[in-house]
Image 1 (cartoon, rainbow, N blue to C red):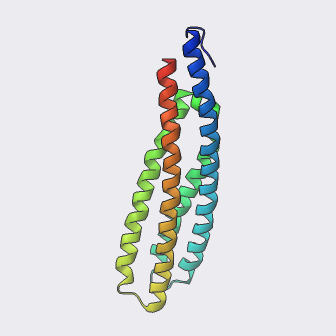
Image 2 (cartoon, rainbow, N blue to C red):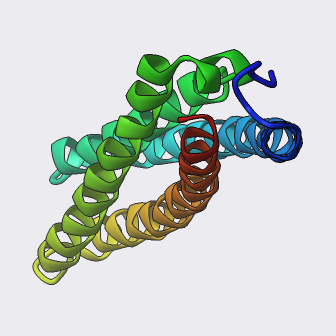
Length: 166
């Protein structure tokens, strides 16, 4: 990866940064894959609960769709490679997903607040359904936050590499 224009010391620093990037990308891909699987499982559980709801099925299915959306995003991000990091356009595209994930986390938080409000006027059975989905949504938010933490590491490494190779 060392560029002929770099002095030996800089080339060594770049090579070290690339090795760090490889480890971070592998970790990022693993975290993304884990998050995707965990969120898919949560979405499946939430879908079951939503199906049993008579009064709030649509709202609960919306919560399921939010969770499934992040799971799908995480699955795509798990495919991120060292080659993607080298391609500035591809790296920028992947890093833009960070804002998308943040927006979806905010959507989850908003959905939780909305569901808790609806639970106040729900029957006992519907309240149990809502509480089950809220619990799963809270777990989904935690999973998505772990994905954001991995994003930060990739973003930092990308910035470092760009600084050293510009």
